[in-house]
Amino acid sequence: MSGMSGMRFPDGFLWGAATAAFQIEGAAELRGPSIWDTFCRTPGKVHGGDTGDVAADHHRLWREDVRLMAGLGLGAYRFSVSWPRVLSGGLGFYDALVDELLAHGIEPCPTLYHWDLPQEWEDAGGWPERETAYAFASYAETVAKTLGDRVGRWTTLNEPWCSAFLGYASGVHAPGRTSPADSLRAAHHLNLAHGLAASALTSVLPSSARVGIALNPSAVRALTDSEADLDAVRRIDALANRIFTGPLLHGAYPDDLRVDTAALTDWSFVRPGDEALIHQPLGFLGVNYYTPAVVSAASGGPRADGHGDSEHSPWPGSESVAFHQPPGERTDMNWSIDPTGLRELLSRFAGEAPGLPLLVTENGAAYGPDLHDPLRIDYLRGHLAAIHGALAAGAPVEGYFLWSLMDNFEWSHGYGKRFGIVHVDYETQVRTPRSSALWYADLARSGLLR
Image 1 (cartoon, helix red, strand yellow):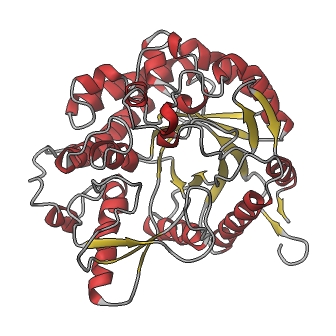
Image 2 (cartoon, one colour):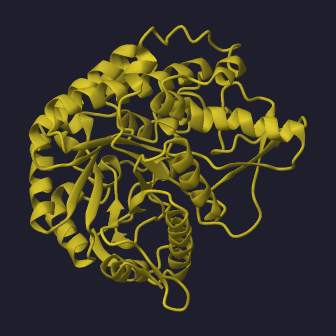
């Protein structure tokens, strides 16, 4: 139903919100160090020298936070499990969190990796090394053996593109390395980690459990319809999207990706059988979306990298491509607002992998600290209308996780950017729902986008 009465979402559509461990938990003294702890303590890497030591203090206030979610009528909560915390014996925290969520009628949806690699594994080489993938699979199995009797929906990795290319090529994310060749190795071993972990999870979980992955695919548009600009789209689509969807959905890396990056690597790190290991059956595909990309052939001179202010590019092998800021309104992250990119991606995956359930696992906007946030409501309304359009066109979208439940540590931006529908006063840790939280609560209860 649409028109004056609004857009009705299907019965059973999952309404949730998302967070990540390092961004909200705090209690750093109760876990081992991650690459983000080290990165935060490297001068000049994080705005204001901020750290995740306390963050939003969720490790202490989790019961209050679950009551807050229940008060907003959320049906699901996507959180991440901290690998360093589990290594330090802290799996009991997540065990209790899952029980509390279920007691309030909220489905727990854990993500096993949201960028906080244990520092000990980075010291051993990090994601460019194959053994990290096997270590991740072992960790995943440990978590599943404890939580698997109550959790039915599992995400292995969050945005492996960011882990590989922002962490190892541009260096604007932890661990801050700037090796294009290593970033490609990291991308492969993240893919391999997903495949190995998915296999490990299914070996210990009930048959009803579903295992997926959350990608941040890019809706890539050409600046003009010239042949050179369209080839720039192809190049970035390979590095942003098909480097993951190739092996995940089709069991092979795309040939053009290998050709484009041949000057950096011979891809010998892909061993026989790896692509088949990655190509595990998916229970769902998570789509994280914020803004599209507009590209052209580079015309010489300074070349924007399309992600952050680093002098190093996160796009290995794409020196011939330039990025452009689309016109129109932007969020506080300076990201252009364009919901059509989300509908485009959902329709793309519905066609590329017919029948594969889709989840929008992240979508949201950073704005100022005010409690009244009409711009965020407008952003959310526009993107949810795009999802409704994709559903009407046949895309099997099962749910939506708003980013983010609460204000938090926004990676290299520190505490300077606020994505939360719940305001956090970092001095007192008092939580206050914004206007957008109340608006979203109405939507979650009614299923009607007004």
